[in-house]
Image (cartoon, rainbow, N blue to C red; front, side, top):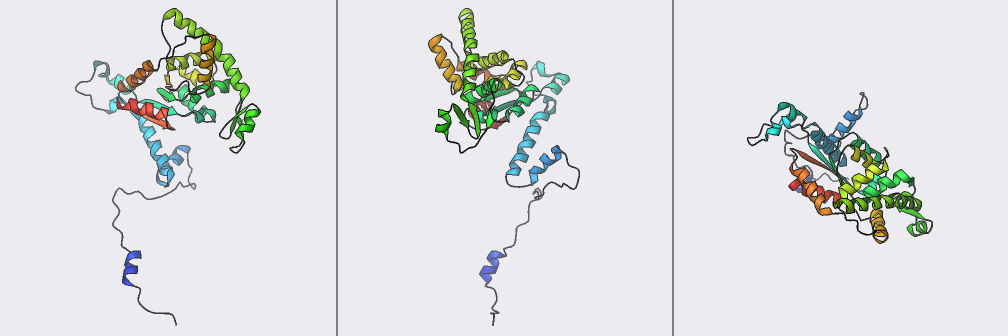
Length: 295
């Protein structure tokens, strides 16, 4: 017959341990209710209480919305406030400066169009990215990028004049077109440098390319049009570096000074009444913006 012995006290206490009361601020887990009419805004807001990684996305959305809504008029007037910011109208119009940082894969992918929208409509005030994040935008204006597979053999593709970026393919002809487009621009920039004595910085270099591409499909065309600075401390780390290297033999003397740009980036942060950062990826873009926020 089955045993009718009592449950061991220690085992029962370990499994059925009573809970401490939850704090008043604790939120319950709940997902979106599709029985009701739901907007994209409501759907994204619901991520805050779904759990797991959705929580992080929900919190990120809240933080970005705070950046977008903030005005200097939300803050009391400081005792040492500059006269430039005493006017109620000026305080209402003074917004948070948003620094956007991203790695090159976002530009290589279809997320480029999302970044383009943000820049075109002035939702960001400064950009920091990698060399690939610069060159891939211009290369896409000159040739197509294609969907492929992560498992395609890189060595075999290279023999066929193809370059794999994750599960994307960029024909090598695109880089040849890029060199053909870029080389005469570098010649002109060098001539202007010799004439004026003013050297280039990565941001002024990128601004010039944004002007020259003259293509509304380019992120940096819109950065040029809207006077949004684009910083790239590692400008030579990619195809751009190859082109500058080749150009240094054909027509030597072009100077690109990163020191001026680190000052420009840090000063932009220092002079902001409120600054926020959106970091998509790590490395250069994260470090440069995070460091500027400390200034």
